[in-house]
Image (cartoon, rainbow, N blue to C red; front, side):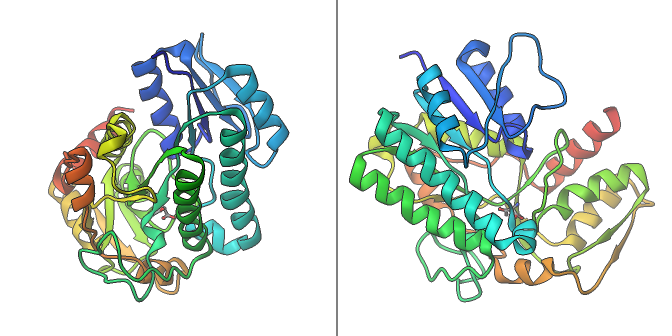
Length: 314
Ligand code: AKB
């Protein structure tokens, strides 16, 4: 079957790389990128539409114009920015999702990807090897909106038969597009500063372990989940993905193996510390392994080498 794909939020950290991967897989003409503003450059032949996910009429026009068979909804406000603008974060993360779900039901668009996050877990969730099912009491507005979103996508699957697939992404590490407004962003900034300045001041404490993942693994996971036969999928909220867990001190150590003069310091009192402290240190992803054969490719050593090599060359 010929697929036509619309990506909402295509300019962001994940969106910009997922758009390239989807165009490669499905053909340039079959993938429509869209965001609230135009990207810095648009390659010849790429289709791009300006759209705000909170403007339901605009979304409806887009969906009627292109008749997508799949929608990827990536537009969201992340954890740190969300704490500065809680109402805006709730509005964007919830109403953007509801607009897409309702239009999908109305227009008969069956397949949707929507990302969740490790932020759905909270202070009373198990911290180590956090299972798919456990106490979930997120205390950031981002985490609360993602958990509510998970309940909504499962509800729309059960009630309207939508095939919505989702991953609880850990922090994503990439060199092409910087992340914006997340708690895990330090694990990207550290590489940029290591190359540019030879040092980095980290806003999380040295021993704050968090689950992370190299972008190539995150893109592959997304494509593999979307390709998996529907009958194999037992999770209709969002799949845990473990990635790799490490602390700021451990990643600094890894960078020093390649850049021995790299210096790391730590700033105390950043509000992102409290968010990080409420999240899991490591995640259990046995459902993803069992249901769609998920296997991680990049460990901390691999991703450190890739990040430093690519940032140096670009
Ligand atoms: C954030 O830090 O807010 C995001 C996430 C883990 O969802 N990167």
